[in-house]
Image 1 (cartoon, rainbow, N blue to C red):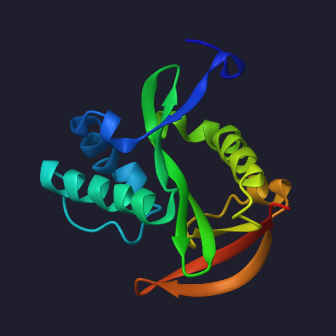
Image 2: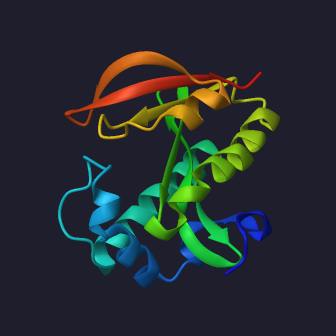
Length: 161
């Protein structure tokens, strides 16, 4: 296996990924542990609806979630989604790529800093996420607890300008 420094990270669009890859990813119970809004079984229909919703963000806002590739292979999804007047950053990786979160987030945040529409980004994390050192090292500050979809999340904010 390549060392972590030899891993090439790239972003592409979700429709470029075989739906069975996304279904397997989102059906993994290790992923669901930190996704309180993830309910029900994932199948091809759920995947198609998910990809359609994320692509609608691209059409509406000119930005959205990407599929993340590590050395050309699907590693998860993440990116920016407009929530009211804020750009929220989310990242959902396959368990074997959990350790790459900081590198992937740094690459995405470089993109955000170059986009004049994004003066700050927010992060909504479930309370089950207790290891927050990487987020703090990025410079994000805790805003407070928020309700999103009937669930409690920890909200952080990072200035990009």
